[in-house]
Length: 528
Image (cartoon, rainbow, N blue to C red; front, top):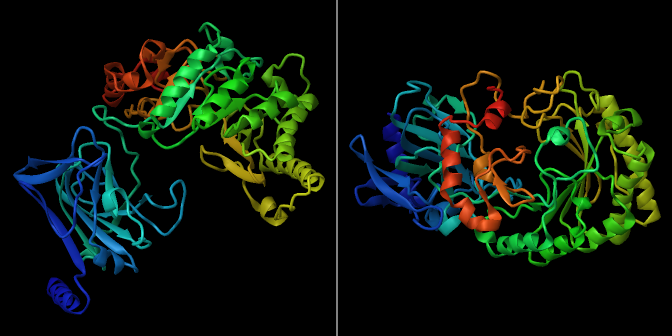
């Protein structure tokens, strides 16, 4: 009866304003129906037959399937859309649907918003053709993606799609889709090319601090500085290849070490920013002077992370900073903020404080009253800057501050904006891949996000996302690999692109996916 009513309502809609439902079905020669499936860029598809049915699957160079709706139908989708995907799989949550949303959420203003996936909870583990339903209540008909697409399917394992339907109302059997799949952590496939998301160029691994939570003290790798000319060559290639380097994340001029020790730092930043390559620095703040900080601001530095970490004289002792007392150190951090305001620098500042609430035996900032007291001190300092430099005072809701739990946040930390372009953030302590811990040998707290000991899951996204160049040109697969055990190549002997597309990096991805872990990776994941 429901199906009959649906067909009757559909016929009436066609007579009055157009169809309520569109479909695309895959045939031996490709998709056929009212929905277009463009094949270009990162969404090139091929037809494969599985269990006697033709399916669309991205080719070896792609990792999306895009779907474009007729403009007339799209414009009628103001109340939202429902998308049904028929695919071959062993469960649900094997892929994501991303669409243009009215939410406006960052990083791309809701253009690639992940949709909720609803499914029928039966037969999980059996490989068969299944349906998944995705409600898009905040669908934005005015924006499209690649080649005019209204949504796309993103995958990390094999994706085989036989049919897709889009309707202006729920499907007749929507009530049967009673379970909501958790948003999957999509695993990247080693045979495909992915852009670099996090690019580190370690200009030096020397450091003026010996913080107890950092592996600097146990690092056996030789200390040195990357020559200015080598850094320039890397930056020039990066500037020329932004199209395949992924989102415009800043290039990080650090892995280990303190970048302000490099004698040519300002010139390096000028070179990069002048070629459209944004730069991020992470500094322990011990070498900040007005001359140095002004030089970086004038060079156009994009992001500066002020690794404050320890907010009082007692905890500051853990940083083992020679010939530097806490009050002098605090004034260096404040100088960086004051000079940004005085110069009107565009540089975004992030003041990091160590949240040790989830860590046993560590007492840096472990209670919310500590966090609030530290915040109050910084608010007072910034209010003084506002008055001194004639800025419009920023409002601070004290009731909301008192009620907020700053330390009960995820691994991304808890952020509070002090001034425009100046954020204070409490970040959870981690253990550098289980290298540093209470016994000096093995960490007592796993790296944030790592599986627990004995876990069978060995996948890590680092080899797919990160490109880390150490000061001597060695390329490693992870920013926490302070010794360089995951080395795949040397970038001084080739190019960034050759290394990233090369066999050594591909094999490292395959090994990670199939559980063949290096010792350093096994330790990080709590498996050793």
